[in-house]
Image (cartoon, rainbow, N blue to C red; front, side):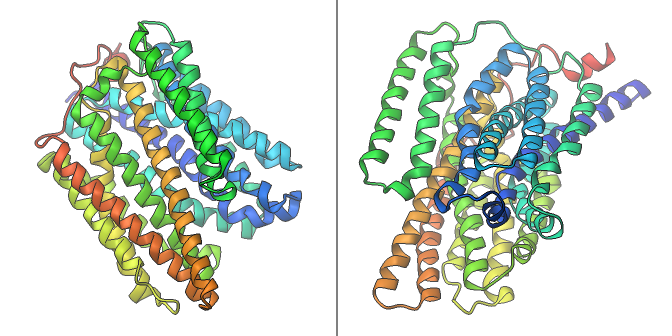
Length: 488
């Protein structure tokens, strides 16, 4: 290997690190705000109802624009759009940190979600086109898998540290130096040819209808607990979203350059991985949010202690995502690791479903954290690889958008359903005269059991539907590769 080749390889892996840092900012902002919500409410004068929108509006715009961002990246260039998304996200972070009213903060969070959607989709697309050899791709996806799996827990820990040591403004302002550094590094490390755009036109009608359907559906899901799942508003909004989705599918069957080539779902691995990804995210949200509530509201942990409690799972996920998962996928393919990983997650949630009111961390929490770390560490990489493999290079961006949307929709729907179930169970136990902490714990137990069912179902579907064998690849090699661009 000559000096030029070594330089190209080093530059490519450094570019991966930069992409992961950009993605980490996006993942962190999905959870870092949760710990700071009481401080934000007291400082800006939010009402109890409006406070939830500080978190929800980010998820709303993030989920609604994933598919559109993926398609725009395919047509106009992933590198260019990644830089635009980072700039939007970093600028919106500054606005959030300087916000002095509820309306300003909510508006800035909405723009943050839009930039986050672009960065999230396009970073995966760039990784898939930069690393085309199976071993390298598995390793690269392991890095991004670690960021996705562990970033949420790190967000809780970082949110507690920044809010306690400084103030809530810094949970947003910390993004500014990171964002500027990532933008500068991308300009240096990502050659202009990386992730070049393809040919074709943007499907405006399809883009508008699918984005509208997703935004309305996500809003209905997030508002369901407040308005009631059987309310006219919730059912009506879901009905409108479904009707728009039907219109979208009709448009896509006739479009010459559809925003979602429906032929993607003829690939069994892509279709199966997206269904499994929804269940994976639903189980992940069940563990993360409900176990955090159990630790804080039942066991009395501080926000910082909650973040520290998640460290064992994060460390295990890191070890698997940054090396072990790669070797497992190369040896066994995607099907076996995914099935085993999700069974471990189901076992973890089952353990949490028996944690008592007077629980002890070492006995009642740590074993579940360890199993959860193992399960998520083993399973995430296979899900991501299967969801974006066997597609043409020109469609990798939209495949990434579909995968991200599946994860987000699965997580949002799963969280809403499980939170509603936990609340209903807690209310029922309280009405029967059960002690408040015991009633809370009983509600969490019910939700953990259903989360375990989600994980077990994902394991079964992965075992039955995903192809066995080696890591799947693109149906054809990309015409332009980053290594060639760097040499030229």
